[in-house]
Image 1 (cartoon, rainbow, N blue to C red):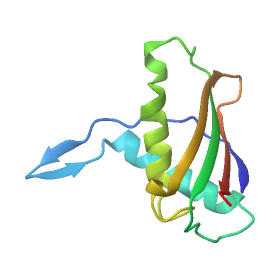
Image 2 (cartoon, rainbow, N blue to C red):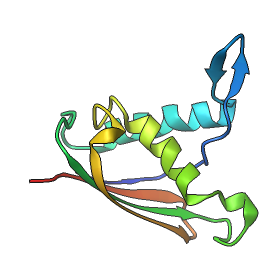
Image 3 (cartoon, one colour):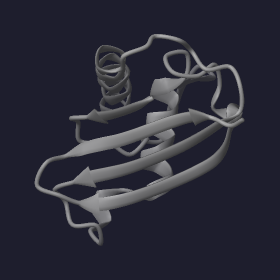
Image 4 (cartoon, rainbow, N blue to C red):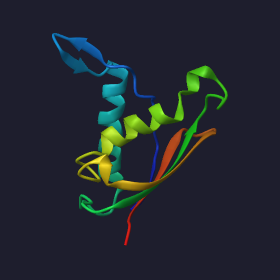
Length: 118
């Protein structure tokens, strides 16, 4: 599966705890919802992968890569992984190979490739 998702990636924010329950910040929650919806619309198949996976993603944002506001690469990936659980794969534990780049670009997007490992 390969898709170019036209969205500005949002780093996963720290959850807040209310009565012992972790709740995502509104910006993170909205990003996950929007990202999952876009991927569902853009992909040509709707199967959920169940085997071992190789994932490659190139994240493009208008903010300078060196800017503190850009977000740590692991936090950008975390939000994307959470959004795709139950949409593209059963669980992100299936991912055994991962390549991620964060880049500055005029058009914010996430180029995503997911393949089953044979």
